[in-house]
Length: 99
Image (cartoon, rainbow, N blue to C red; front, side):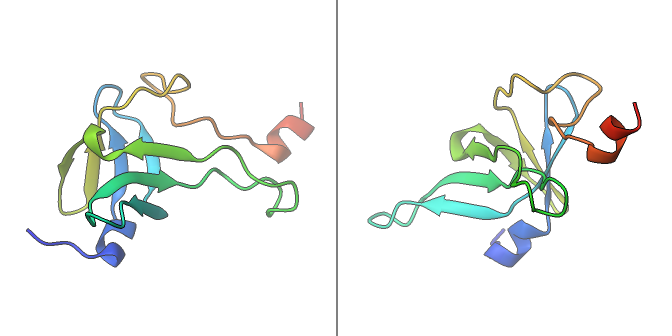
């Protein structure tokens, strides 16, 4: 199966061990000499329409990619903030204001 960058951007990344959704591929890091992919990058959630920056990006080493399917990419890397029933750390600005 061949895949172009636009196809990768439309695939959702799922953590194999917890089943949590990490996000969609935003960027790819590759080695220029060998043209091999090194990392997949998922940008962090923007805070308040991007005015307050964004959360940390998720860098997924290519070695941790288990399967690339038609709609999803399954990965097995270790993210300390991932739990069995939660997605990656996302801040909710309005929710914290209402508390």
